[in-house]
Image (cartoon, one colour):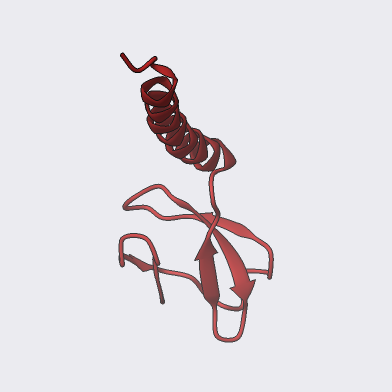
Length: 79
């Protein structure tokens, strides 16, 4: 028995029936898990590259907006 690191659900995994590097799916949250170790079974969440890129872009976009606003304030001519 293994617990999903994402939602803590119990996943019925027989260590004699899985191989290191095998991909499992949590039945509760549908996250993909990679088997890192077989005896005892240890799994890790596989990061979804698309989601990671979206998060990075969102952070970058937020920083750019703040920088643009600061630059435009600095460029305004003083009277």
